[in-house]
Image (cartoon, rainbow, N blue to C red; front, side, top):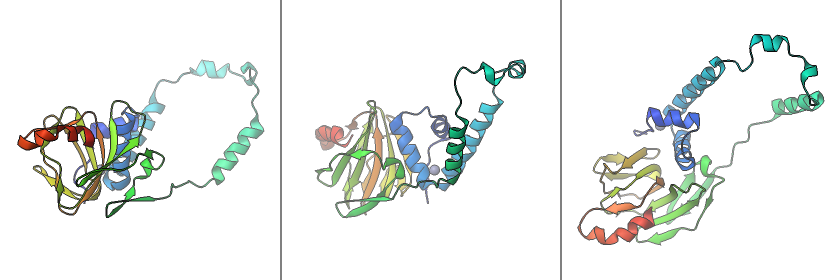
Length: 228
Ligand SMILES: [Zn+2]
């Protein structure tokens, strides 16, 4: 059961296409897993379409009355248009194939939104493995993160923000327990220490390095850049 979703403002920006590419990617990946947000997106899309058609017409009625095909200064290939339309009605929606990836002992399904995004090699550091996604969004880092059984990330906060989508397994922190599909948006107001008993795989989008806050883990600050 998914308990954590993008808020209404994020879903609206997602439908309007105003999110950064990497943020849009992780929202889209959540929506794939979440029937609740699929409904929200459907409704927001319908509203956006209605608003678009309610907008002031580009041409007035007088313009349209006086318009004739002779005014057009290019050749319209009606046959070609008919053919394209006919083809479109016969085409079947192409559903991208499901891709599965195994890291350590965990096999998980890649969200379809990520199918065409190249992944760099997995890098391992203790119980944490990270594969950065090769994604042209310079403001953010997008990665797949695997934490092995009984692993944890030292207590940290974020200079910017960190969005986590749980793709497999579960983890918990001071704020609760998270399961597959949960979408968690944290910023500098949050300090947490994620830990997993069964292991987990997350998709993460971060705008800056993690900042470790406590005792010995401050020594790990290079790790903050590694995970980011
Ligand atoms: Zn949702």
